Length: 344
Image 1 (tube, rainbow, N blue to C red):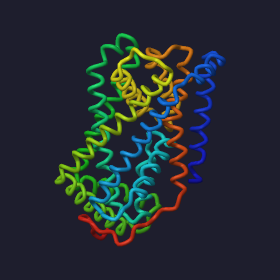
Image 2 (cartoon, rainbow, N blue to C red):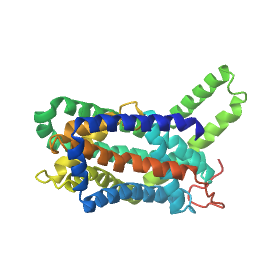
Image 3 (cartoon, rainbow, N blue to C red):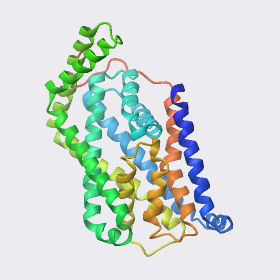
Image 4 (cartoon, rainbow, N blue to C red):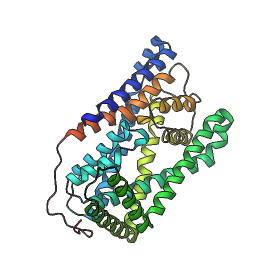
C-alpha cells in the first residue's frame, strides 16, 4: 500500500484541480442554490445504484469462486471486489486491479491458477457485455449525438473498437494453452538474463502447473453454461445500475424532458472514452467527457455541480471504501473443497 500512496495523492490532486476548474466555470452563488434544491431521494437512488454495481460484482465473484473452490464467504468476495475498485482507480488503464485481486485471493487460500481463471472469466464477460451494451447504444443513439457533438462520438467509437479488440484477445488466449506457456518461459528467460531470477526451472514448472490449472478451471466454466448465463445477466444489471447514476443526478436537479436511455447511452460513451486514457481513474478525461455529453441535457449553470455529484458517487466514494477494505486483514479459508481443487 505504501508504494501506491503517490498514486492516491495524484488522483486526489487531479480531482481537486478539476473541482476548482468546474467551480470556476459557474456562478458560485447559483451553484450553492442549486445544491440546496437537490432532491435527496434521487441522490439516494444514485448511491443505491453504485451500491448495486459493487454488490452485483460481489455476487458474481462469490458465485465463480465457489464454483471452483467452495468455502468462500461473501465478505471475502466483497474484499476482493473493493480491492479491485481501489487499485483500478489509482493505476493507469486500471491495470493494478486484477493483479491485486489475485494477490488478495491467494492470501484467502485460492491457488493462483484458480484466481486467474476466475478473474479472467469475470473480465471477459464484463468486457463482452460492455462492448455489446455500447454497440447497441452507438447504433441507436449515434445519429443524435453525432449531430450535436460529432468529434466526441468518434472518440467513443475508438474506445469501442479498443474494448472489442481486448475481448477478442482474451477469448483467443483461452484457447492458446501452449502459446501462453511459451510466453511465460520467454519472460522467465529474460529475467534470468537480467539476473533477477536464479532458479528458472522451478519457476517454469510453476508456470506449467498454474496454466494447466487455469485451463482446467476455464474448461469447467465453459461446460457450465447456466452459470455463465447467470453471470452475464448479472453483469447487464451491474452496468445498467452504473449507467443510471447520471440519470439519478439529472432527476435530482429537478430536470425532465430527456429519455432515460439517451442518458444511459451517454454514460456508456463516457466509459468508452475514459477506459483507454492512461491516467489513473481517467481523472480529468471522465469529467471532460461528462461535460461534453451532458451539456446537452443540463443547464450550464448547474452542469459543474452535476459533474461533481456524479464523480463523487461513481469514483471517490468507491475509492475511499476500497482503500479502507484493502487495509483490513484477510480471512484465509482453510480446507477448501471444490470441483477444481488440485495441487498447484
